[in-house]
Amino acid sequence: SDAIRALVLEDVLDSGCLEAAERYLAEEADRLQEAKKDAAICEFRFSGVEKRAFFTASIAVSEVLMTQFQLQEGVEFKLKVVPASNSVFIACRGEEIASMIKTGAEAAIERARRSSSQDISVLNEAELRTAGSFADVSEATLQSLRKESELLLSKEPRALSSKSK
Image 1 (cartoon, one colour):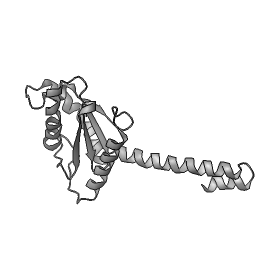
Image 2 (cartoon, rainbow, N blue to C red):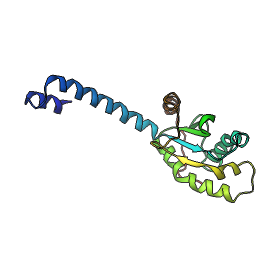
Image 3 (tube, rainbow, N blue to C red):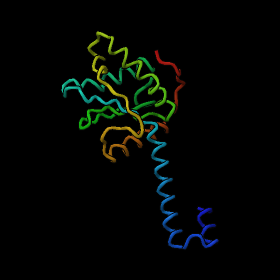
Image 4 (spheres, one colour):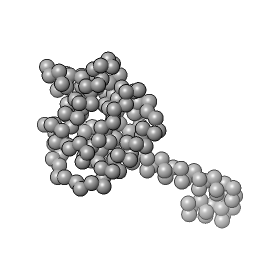
């Protein structure tokens, strides 16, 4: 904003351009903040899964997060099922946990493909998506997930192992 004001003082920009430029920079700052919040969100998309099987997806995802990553629901993550996009979103307590999930999710999905367990077999069809590549999801859903992440940050943290099994 100071750089833009300097351009006005040097007669490079007029005051009308100043207002437009400041508005643009404010909008960019807002988008940057949202992108930072979105980095704490993961999506498991189950596009090829029948409706009945999809309802077991959130249970399978939750089981993987709790057993393989030792995460505690309501403390490190919160699940949100979005049937319209056949997705299970995970709002995480910060980017570090989301990054840990993203790093280990592919291995967890691969293990599910080799598993005979009915509880996690739905993960065979999972596609992991991250910020910038989420399925068609409403802004209201994203706002809700961002808020969940912020609420999780307000809770007392637990010591976590950065390794998944």
